[in-house]
Length: 260
Image (cartoon, rainbow, N blue to C red):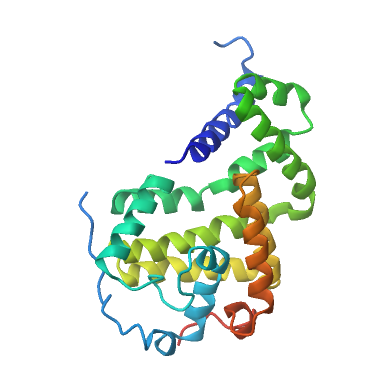
């Protein structure tokens, strides 16, 4: 896992300890192969109901960054090379090496994700003593990154309210289901059974593709405040909102997600 990710996880775990410190100030498997992955790539777009295409468009920013397909469940051709590459990426960036790891990561997102850390900071950022205690536990480098995250929380937490980083978390949740299908960790049926409820949650929580995309960008900045990719994601955001063939242009936000 990348050093930036490790630093974020350390920061998140320390943040969740702050309340405890305040209360007690003196207290020291084998992979399961996916099914039906032989579906014709050429017919993939025509083969999916528009509701499923809508769901696949939720992580479009990430899909575009990875140069993957918006209209195919497993993102790209299921070649041996592509499968091996995605398995490496899941292991490196997510610590996912198996079906069990993937399912646990999906559960972690539904029960908190980046929202948990963001919301905890939103509750505590006005408590200078709590913030000081946390900063004291961080290295100089991690402290600088913490302060960058704190600026993002101060700017956006009041505007985001109960939605928090829902768009960021659940867009990546859907992406993980797609990658997991490509890698053979879950079947297509399992993936859709997880993706469609997530898509409905996003549709009910945001007002447009632009609204969802903005939340994703905020989440990405919170996750990696100083990443050079943040600017690239902004540019992709504008492409998705403007290019005629973009799924955000061709699939209406108000599309019914009921699959008949």
